[in-house]
View (cartoon, rainbow, N blue to C red):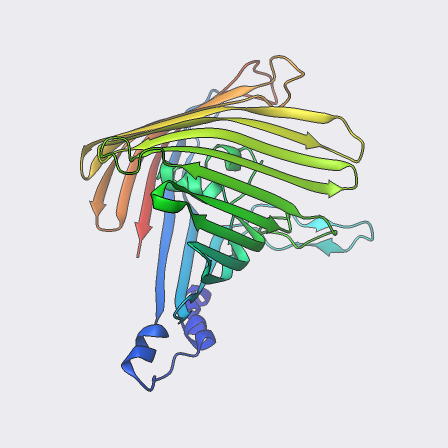
Length: 350
């Protein structure tokens, strides 16, 4: 708790907030501090689970943002989570990336953005948001309930170290977002010379039409060479429609992974669809369905996931979502058991 309490002081010291000579400088150098907590109560209803239940804090994020200059901004996010991974020993017997099973702090964002480097386009450098996962999370609106499809299946992540270019298309017809990254995610350092390439294009077909302006069509592609003659690829075609009273979205994923140089490509992927209906400004229902095939050259090895529930905003910055999440395998085995878990999820912003 002392480490968490010290975080804002460390941020303020790092940014060097002091009395500015003018009111304009004071506004420019002001640091914005905010955060969010994802917490839940889970009750496992699966066969053989023996009514296992418990409270958990999935994530806590502490965010600092500052405008360094008129067109230069900085953001840092610290993520607090419960580490459950064992220490990893290398071939010499020394421990790598090993730490205790408890609460840990790691960097999620640390980047500077240079605005309007090109017409309607910004460049960001550092540990930055990637083009797809944060984009889909904004449509999904329930990151405190679940990660999005490809993040859940460990095929994509949200941030990495590198450089991105993000810009708007003319006359509000959409946007594009491209990135060149290390490819090791925010949780590990670079291990070789190869890089990870991402590109997303989102088209708004009718930005001036009151009915159709919420329609967006998106395409995304990613490839990275893990080694010489070892390439992984991801691609999606995705459509979404956002309205004041409801949201619908969905797409189909194509994934290719090569486990080693010259290895055969394992093709996987599948569809994911999502819907939300608002009953009132503070109450709603949401459902999502994913279907994942881990190897399209095999049969009966896939599964589907269903998330469904209702939510209420209890206060400004506080949401409660009551849901059931079920995972069903095409062929249930001892290793792949069907699961059903009931949740009470909380999102607390401050």
